[in-house]
Length: 118
Image (cartoon, rainbow, N blue to C red; front, side):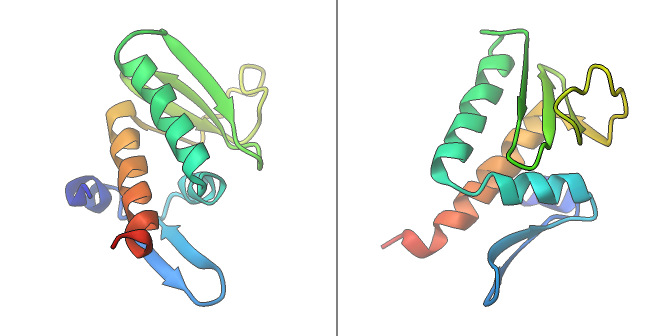
């Protein structure tokens, strides 16, 4: 778990008896992204997509979650939007270095797997 990155974005993980495992941050769109990216499949798919951009297999990648959190991923920066047609709606809600997002997702994955370790 990358504690420096989590501290940088003031991210905390919590296990709620009512809602299960949650990620909290002052960045609401990032919280919603975590809620939408809770299954192993979603996490692995997201990490593979980020890696393909970071390794320059593709120059740009865009994807949306079930609640329409939309990411526009480039090697240096990832931008978050609240609409799948973000090109027409240029209101960037949040952006961060793509490597930071990858570390946040890897930390989230590690937290979600904690109960499943032997």
